Amino acid sequence: MKDTKSTVLEKAEKTYQLLSGDEACRGQASHVRELADRLKNQDITVAVLGQFKRGKSRLSNAILESSVLPVGIVPITSAVTKVVYGKKAQAEVHYQNGVVESVPFEQLSAFISEQENADNRLGVASVVIHVPSRFLKNGLTFVDTPGVGSFHKNNTETAYQYMKESDAVIFLLSVDSPINQIEIDFLRNTREFAGKFYFAVNKIDVVEEEELQQYMDYCRQLLCRLTDSADVAMFPVSAKTGQGVEELKKAILRDCKKSAGEILEASTEKKLKDAIDSALRQLDFYWKAMNMEYKELDERFAEISETIAEIKAEAEEADGLYEVRLNEIKLRLSEKVKALFGMEFHYDIDSLPEGIVTMSKEDFLQKTALLCDSLRETLDRILLYREENAYTVVRRINNINKLSRQLRKIKSEL
Ligand SMILES: Nc1nc2c(ncn2[C@@H]2O[C@H](COP(=O)(O)OP(=O)(O)OP(=O)(O)O)[C@@H](O)[C@H]2O)c(=O)[nH]1
Ligand SMILES: [Mg+2]
Image (cartoon, rainbow, N blue to C red):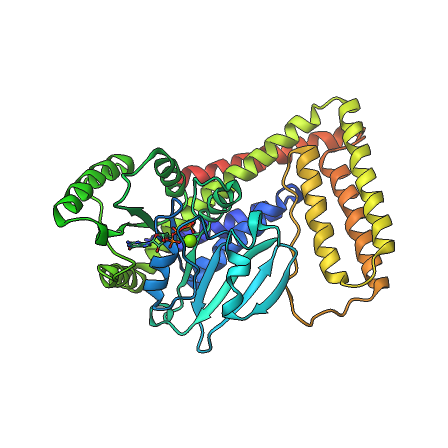
């Protein structure tokens, strides 16, 4: 009999094979590849999620026995902050355009705090911190995230996007406020993606024992209802005094040691379902595009041609930082395709550590032209733009149908 682990992995591999065979689903294929690799390598991510000001960053500091993450009375965390084990403490900022830059710890808040990097105007994708924490020694990645529900919408969006990536979640509540609708909605969404939950209740230092008991009973009942469970494990903690933090850490470490495989499988299974849904939506889009009026399709193709011409003209004017420009062009092209055709168009964004600037202008112009021309060709081909050969159309429709059926079958077995 097969064990479930190989089954989930096999399904991920099979899904990857199917998706990578159709250029319409490149983005989903590369996502599924990552999922399969993480499951194979048993790379587990534990993230702290919750509403703003519940004490996520302060609890993260308490767990990591450091004070590296900025904490405050106003909404603070504005960027996803990943913490991994490293003998030497160091930090680097990963920008959306692929640039990676080392920064001293003292300057971290310039990148991850709402006050200093308002609305993420610096374009930070994430910050990676290396600390010699015992908690991380077995290879887990710990993540502090921006809080949901504050005035700063960008933080809510970042947290919602990130929650799709964590395997285990510390969902942080706080005794100074009963669980509310913002938290319930966020929890419902997070449950679609994570394999394991730790419900922690923070700030227990501000209430009497009796009040705490009332709060815990109330929350437990509500969480049982929300998660359809007979009981849920809850961890009362104080990030301020450290009370209860050891118990939470112990539970996480025990689970990561004993059942990392199971947690990862459960999480991969959910993420795989989501990737398949996204591929099915994409394929459905092609159906619709095939029925689109020529006039409408013509207009959209004219607009993408305009963007391409603009990009090429701007590239001629560019003067330096060519690797960065190329990543920016990729981001711009996929954004445009999304806006015009409603479909995800995936490019790998090259990671650009400091000092790696080697591309010549000639090379840059050539690569830009290649990106632009191949986008046009791919769109022409997958949208059957001006395709008059009935055989090609029928074959494409059959392929889409077949792929959709195969994906639905895998999904139904998950
Ligand atoms: N009394 C008490 N205060 C706490 C505790 N944990 C956090 N705080 C305070 O609560 C406020 C918010 O803490 P943060 O850690 O910044 O909260 P956060 O959830 O990371 O906030 P965002 O990043 O904005 O989402 C700060 O003033 C903290 O000092 C705790 O256990 N007890
Ligand atoms: Mg924070």
